[in-house]
Image 1 (cartoon, rainbow, N blue to C red):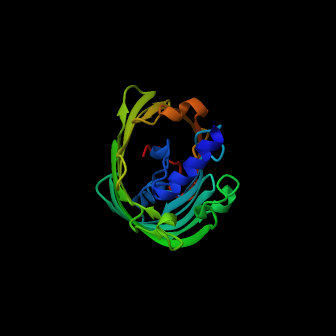
Image 2 (image 1 turned 90 degrees about the horizontal axis):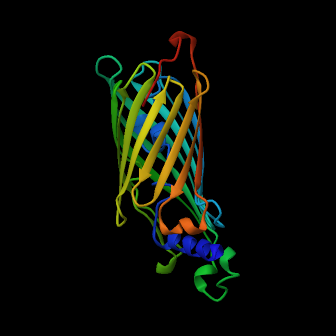
Length: 304
């Protein structure tokens, strides 16, 4: 049964509107803004590096997994920031690898209020090893030839933040690329997403803060995605919360501020769709390190 789901999933992913690289889903998106919005670059005020590893629908053969690295920092005048983003997605016999550079121009309004406008450009490598499925469909011509192609990509974003809230709007994949081998049966389209994010920080007591977050994603010819999140911050050290991706999964999220510079996060997704009967949930691990420079002294808390 699980092998059948693996084959069907690979086919649907390749013949439908592919949404791995250009619309990768993260449970901890509120801690990894550059992955969905180039205007997020420089928002940590120091050089910041993040690694995320996500394993989805554990227990299914060929289940999706995503590895992400992002790094960003403001330049010396603080108005300009640069970033880099690497994402590798794999689902069954299909994989994508994207590499992008991001640029953000930041306009400061008063104390710790920024409006940032960002852009990113890069390349996406797409591979579909259909020949590996020959053992199941040896007579079908669809499985006789693999796809290995590369396409450019460009994205835009805007991000506003102050000490209490943030709002972001991004279109990280503007090029509607086509990967094919000359026939309609072997064509894969990339539909660009529009992503809206927002969050607010409420101080409940001296030791407890509450931060709700929202992610709204629109994809051409696909259902709208909505992720509603509620996180609590205990004593500036421990984040704990829940997210609900409407009609898809419930995420449990924990993040620990190990030092002023190092934080470690983990999320576990409980699937709410019909596939839950044949899989064991999804796991996502996050590691963030912020490099502290002597001239800036102690790193102040950055909630967004």
